[in-house]
Image 1 (cartoon, helix red, strand yellow):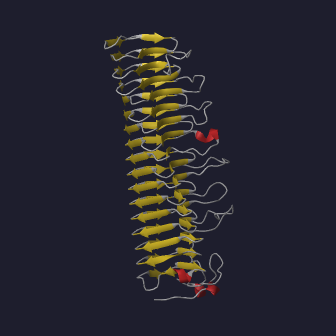
Image 2 (tube, one colour):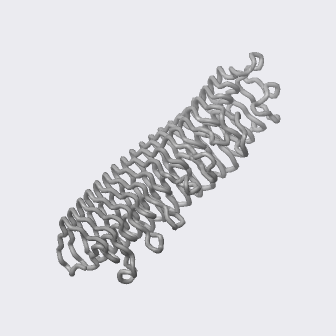
Image 3 (cartoon, one colour):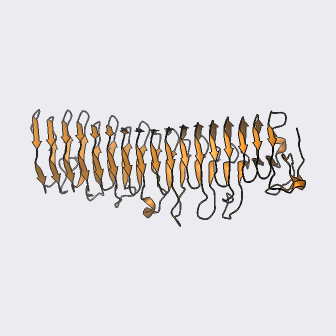
Amino acid sequence: MLAQDSTVAVVGSLVDDNTEAGVVAWVAVDLILDSTVVRNTVAGAELGEGLPKGGFGLENIGASAIVQESLFEGNSTAGVWVGLDGASVDLLSTVVRDTEPDDNGEGLGMMVCAGGFVSAESSLFAGNSAVGVAVYGQGTEAVLSGTVVRDSKANNLEFSGIGVEATDQASLTASGCLFGGSAYMEVIAVGAGTQVHLGSTKLHDTAGASQEIAIRAVQATEGASFDIRDSLLEGFEMGGIGAYRQGTRVNVAASVVRDSMLPPGLANATGVALEALGGAAVAISGCLFDARTTAGVAAGEAGTAVVLRGTMIRGTKAEEEGRYGMGVALTEGAAMTLFKTLLDKNATAGALLLDPGSIMLFDTSAVTGTLIGGATVDGPGKGVFGDGIVAAAGGELEVASVLVARNARNGIFFSHASGTVANSTIVGNDFYGLAMEECADQVEWEGKGNYVVGNASALPPDKAVQVTTSTGGMAVPPAPEMIEIQTE
């Protein structure tokens, strides 16, 4: 215990095998820990009313510490904790690892709460139980730079094995960091007023398959705000970025999400690079989503809105059973805008739009090289689709100044849907440039400045047509006998 208003330096020391806490300041002090080891602190009774246990902690208004080149290892509950408004810690070149869970399952690498502040630079949080870095509460802030958070372990808590967690109006900023190998999720932000900013950070290789739940690298929910810039997310087994619930805001800029495949036989998994549901709002600009499973970007449910600008989505693949594989997918009344965006070499469909109330707008974009290799939306079965853009089941599609080329089936296919196609080039698609099933009277395209040519190369020469305006019940792909040929 340290006296009120004192300044204490602990240098080159070992604090070992204590009960409750290794070093704790619960009065206002200035503390320096340099080249010190605090380890193997074990949990017993509560350290004062409601206070945590662990290796090192500040638990008083005005308490502050500088910790450099030190090690916190094998402590119980929390390796480092900071609580109460005005308490602050600067960690420099410090390691916090292998924190052990207490009876409640908590074994946090670092906990910052109740208005505390932590800056961690060039530090390592590794192998901690439940959460590597946890930031809770209004006014609480953590700033990480050049820091690694890795291999957070699952325990008996329902959701554990998280790299970094921010909740209840806390703020977290990470720059030049590496997050990876956590059992459940790398970064999660929860609650209105919670803010997370990631810059120039790499997130990789979450190991969540063993838990058999649909984890993802990054998740924002319940009204949180999440900003990702100049970052790389790769090698996640079940999903990249998730945005859920009304009021949640996610912005992804100048970043790459790539190279994730669903583990074989895993139930309830999605493998989507970015998923938005429940009224979340997402903005994506200047990004690459590459080699994903199921969908590059998927949005669903009324109130959900996604805007993509200057972004490429390519190389999606169908799941193990042969389903899905779309570049983008929009369902259940959500909205999506794509501007100066390229969808290239995706499986099943470059873009899929379904359901009444769903609205998709393409502007100054391109959909190219879609491959056959997915299946119907409703069930397994390989060897279908291959369309550049599919609008079906009551969705509304608006296409303006878009290139739709070299897709393995139709360029644009409307089925029981509505919309407009204007000032677009539809060329070199294997079947029809523009096909409509029982909805030609709901699609405006004639006299709209479209250039439709060189399609139907996979059809016999006597049935090589460019455009269908049929309102009859067409087969899929549409049968040439059931179409009207339109030339301009």
